[in-house]
Amino acid sequence: MDSPVIKWTLVFALVLVLVFVSAFSIQAVREAYRRKQVTENLKALSLSLRIYHETHPTMPNTEAPAMPSAVPDQANSDKQSNNEQ
Image (tube, rainbow, N blue to C red; front, side, top):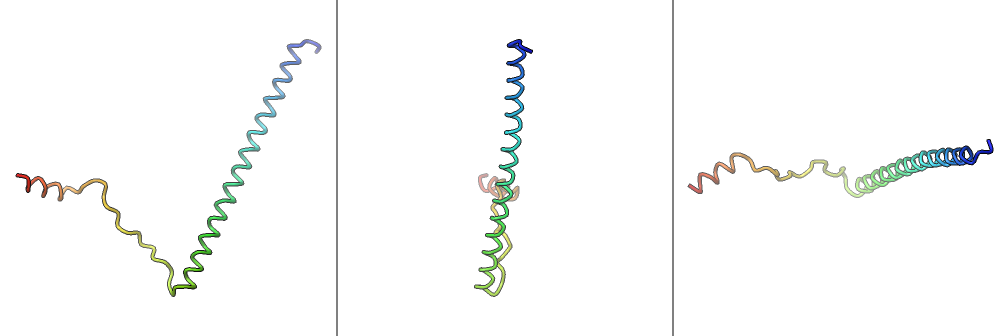
């Protein structure tokens, strides 16, 4: 057990174990922070909806506005090609 190779191997193994344990604990802390952040965001959203409802007699409109299509529809491209001829 007095061999320097064995001592350094044990030190290296101990350092690796400490690194792995700290990495897992850091991940757990990050996950807990993310969960707390989501909870706070939900609380803020519910509070804002509550304030809106107290100010207005109804809840906010939930219908999203129509988004323009990224791909032009076939009917418009046919009309354009007919106009060019």
